Structure formats: structure tokens, C-alpha cells
Image (tube, rainbow, N blue to C red; front, side):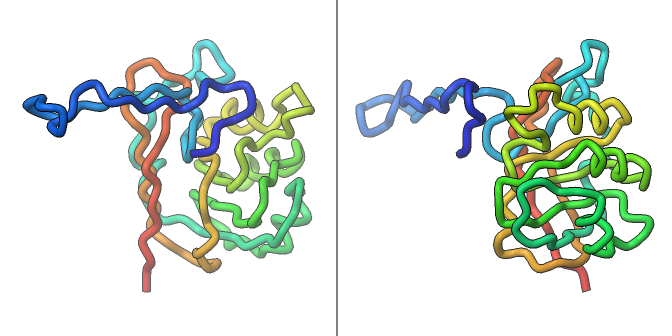
Length: 185
């Protein structure tokens, strides 16, 4: 799993194993809450923001649109317009095939369009060096959930049913999520 620079590394260790004569196998896992494909809750940037256990299931599960933008470093409003995202989309997944980020203007355009969840293939919607986290603050501050580290490499542009279920850990700012797309006909 990808780990954001500076986040805790993933650690997996066997505590018990049937091959060693134990009655069962048990594994300990340690990692940051934003490891691999994960969802950011508003509490990631806002102290009074909702946490992953408070996220509405109707936002993380439902119709979604995958927009293929091509390889871009920073997604701008022009990229979103060129993708011709249909109106009324509530869950938008941005396929770039790269570690792309969102410009502050693209984040504002997503909020203005009424989207409730945006997902990207990159490790962060913000450029690491920017340091202000404008896209995160704009999106999460407006109630738009963020999913990062998606793998859309085998997914063509179009409509799907998104199932993005974060691990329900009380009080967390984010959590790894098993995220799948189901094709619709």
C-alpha cells in the first residue's frame, strides 16, 4: 500500500500462528489512518469536523461517474470542463493515471457543482509542497468527502455504482477503505 511521505509505515506481524502450534492465527497491523486507498473525513482538517464513524453511508455508496482526464499533474477547472462531467453527478472519480492533485480552483468548482464525494488516484488532493492544503480545506470544509489513492487503471470512463466503505473506527480523521466500482448497464 502507498504511504504518504512522513506517515507511519505499514507494519504487519504474526502474533500467533497455527503452524507454530498455536490454536489459531492472529496478525497485528499498524499503519496511519491515511494509508492506501482511504477516505478523508472533515476532522482531518477541522477540529469540530465529522469523523469517519459519522460519515453518511449514502455519500460513500451510490451512483458515481469516472471522468478520464488523461495524464495531468494538477487538475484545473479546464480539465473538469474538458471531461464533460454530466450535470447532477454526486460522486466523481478522476482518472489521470498519475499522482495528480487538484488546484484550489478545481476544488472550488467541484464544491460549486454540488458533488458530495471526489476521488483521485494521487496520494493527496493537494500538492505536498504547497503546505496550505487549499483543496482539502475547500472540499472538506464544504462537506465534500475525499477519497485518495484510488486505482482506476482498468476502469473506463462512465457511470458505476461506488462502494467505498472506510473502516469504522470511532473518532478518526480518516480511514483505509475497501473501494469497488460495480458496472451499470
